[in-house]
Amino acid sequence: MERDDGGLFLVNDALEMILIFDRMGKISYANTAAETKLEYGSELCGKNICDIFPNDFRKDGESFETNYRFGGEIQNLMAYRKNLTCFPVEVKMDSRTDNGTYVCMANDALEKEHLGREIAQVKKEAQQALKVKSEFVANVTHELRTPVNGVLGNVRELLDVETDGQKMKTLRTIERCCGDMNKIINNILDFSKLEAGKFALEPRKFHVRDMLDYVKANHMGKITEKGLEFFMTVSPQVPEYIIGDELRIVQILNNLLSNALKFTAVGKVTVEVLKTAQVNDRIELFFIVIDSGIGIDKADQDKLFQSFSQVDASISRKYGGTGLGLNICKQLVELMGGRIEVDSEKGRGSIFSFSIWVSVTEEEAKASSETDAVRTYSFVGDRAELSSDAQEEDAKKYGTPKNQEALSKNLSKLILCVEMENWEKAEMFMDMIRQLTQGAPREVGRVILKLKMAVQKENYEKVTAGFEELKTLLQG
Ligand code: ADP
Image (cartoon, rainbow, N blue to C red; front, side, top):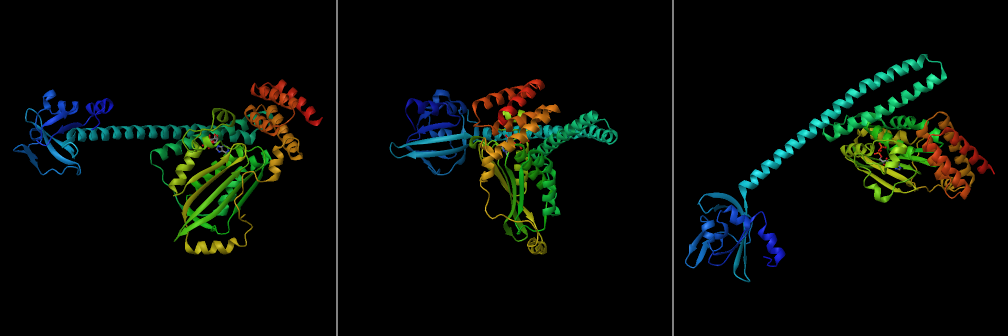
């Protein structure tokens, strides 16, 4: 027992009862909890341990007699109060050979049980509240889908008959907004289902390469629009058919790919699929999505898979998103028995990889290895390094032919967005232009800054003036 002031203070105020007694059983110290719970007050010092535990400690001349094993495990005894009523306690006693004293630490078992019951009740209520909240979110998002899809359906009908260019542009914008809204609604729905533990995978047999072609087709528009290079390689060992939840695998890949494309201005995006393990009819598939985009700080990488987490507020303002995507991916990957990881470097791109376990029939595995040999899919043996491609680096270096090419592409896209008054997208291209002009002469930097401010302020005249000024400067 610590006898300095700090130690004694802690012992005095401890929640459990603490007693010190000597060879004769005489109590020489009792903390506040012991004095209160045994209802002796300050009289407790001077009493005998046999008065407190009469069933287990008996007076024996000058000493006491007991079967209690000092220094052993926690034991359940009955403690007697001053008024001779008793209550169960969990007791641990040690003997101190240096000064011949004994230390007794005891917990009120009833209180502990009561506390345990209370904790269980609080936990139950919290779980119930969470369930109600999740159900509410699920219901609301479900209800939201109906009007959004109603708008979408009507807009599509109007688009079929509309011929006026300006009106069609407006209708397309509404169509795109409904699509975005649906994506957010679906994310919230998935998230609340996963949180409530109500999410069930729906495995069925599907063709892996067809699924990958579908994923690729989903993103082709963006890839072309941004002028990025895109590669998809599938190892020949990946079987033709697998049994898994295709919809959810597509969802994970779509999320990783749209992030990769969202955050990459120049260079390339690569997807690789490998078979990394097999145990009987279960195989592990490993997917890698590599981009040469803005990258993520090491310090921010841990936060990525948490819900509602975006690297910083300016990113969410510029690129949009709810910060739910990667958290959903992580939960889905874990449901499929795998792991998701990120390896990234600020300004150098990112590698997102995940593994999943799926089933395969023996014949299918065999058939896939035979047919894969003649398919055009090729597996590039080594995992690509971040931005290892010399051309990509070249595009980032101001003044090189690749850089000039990327710059003029992005400038045309910027001005197109401004013409269409799509300021959000214009800001995105502005961002790419800024990346591409890093290291440019001072006067270029000055015009870029002016242009950026004009885009942020959505000032059409100033943007076009800045654009012309920049074009002249770049040509000169
Ligand atoms: P959101 O639905 O908002 O896109 P995600 O969970 O998919 O949310 O992504 C969270 C954040 O992680 C993004 O806002 C971005 O800051 C960062 N991030 C994700 N993928 C990439 C990437 N390939 N390159 C750079 N940053 C990324």
